[in-house]
Amino acid sequence: MMGNKTVLSLTISAALASPLSHAADVEVIHWWTSGGEQKAVSVFADEFNKLGKDKWVDSAIALGQNARSVTMQRTLGGNPPGAAQFNLSRQFEELAEEGMLLDLSTLAEKEGWKEFIRPNQVLSPCIKDGGIYCVPVNIHSNQWLWTNKEVFKKAGVKEPTTWKEFLEVAPKIRAAGYIPLAFGGQGWQENLTFNVVMIGTTDKAFWQQIWRDRDLNAAAGPRMLNVFKTFGALRQHVDEGAPGRNWNDATNMVITGKAAAQVMGDWARGEFAAAGQQAGVDYGCIPGPSLRPYLTVGGDVFIFPKQKDKAVEAAQLKMASMMLSPSVQAKFNNAKGSLPVRADVDLTLADACMKKGLALLEDDDALFKHSEIYVNADTNGQLQDLVSTFWNSAGMSAEKAQELFVEIIQNAE
Image (tube, rainbow, N blue to C red; front, side):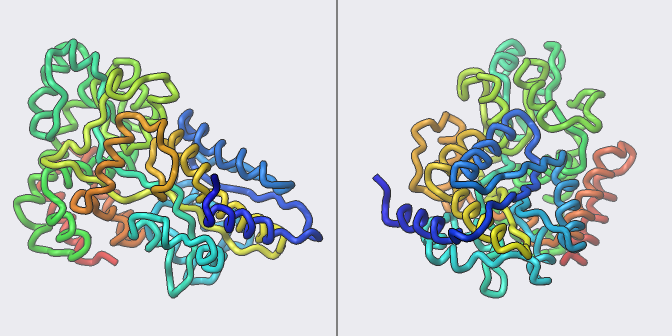
């Protein structure tokens, strides 16, 4: 049975396209290129194409920074795509400030986005000066250690729940003939792991001191130094083929039993599912590792650059509505490995790992905002460069890295 909101959504979608308007091609730029990601984005494409004569035109560009760069350049240059993927962050605020994005406020009000999108911090980055300029499509968190249960069994060690435990069992895993940590040596992956180590060795209060409050005493203190030391200690537990490796190739090392574990966001679950593996049986998902489980509230959003063709604009609004419909939210997020942005969806197919994430989503004390919500793209780029330099420079001390970190936090915007 369809609720009032669903009926209203369908009514709005039907009304958005005038009988006199022509069919529109909507080019969608995204960076979902792995096996699991392609299955997920196909849900959006198929569901949109079912709505009428308008067509989803897929433009997949490998790596998020590349896809975002193309979108920015084309939009600022006057040749925008119809829709584009960004992270739940400040990455697209320049386009919103320049008035280049379609304001979705009217659609959002009619469909009740503020009533069903949860938690509140998922929609808040889309809101600027009273307008709504993006559609959040999922909730992703980075704080996960994915494990191959058979490898841990053969190595004779327990799956770690803290970074201290991981560093204790890693030599035994190596001695048993396995790579302790599957790792992709790309800047964004290095930065992701650094942030996972940071929250895993500290706590939510310290995280907020650094990112929300920009507390220089905390940034220069012993807890932050321990973050750099712990992160640096992981270097010895990755293999020589790590530099430049794609994240999904690292995930495949865990799937095939070459490596014991990988630090990656919950989108990795889509790769395990695509390989036919069962959560809790073939592979494990450990929130953290950390002293207590946490869940970053990050994710993916879609923006819709303004178009001269009104038929394209009408199609953009239909696409935005489709992405948030209950049935599509269930199908897409089950394939993607992420959590839906609305609670009123059918999650009977949720596996053991997805259920862990859903349970954490109900715990306010476990939720915290991703660092990119607090700093702009330029500051985030500086941080990523520092983390990458430290990871790839064995001669760089943790003390020196911390000193540079403090300078970045001091000047962060």
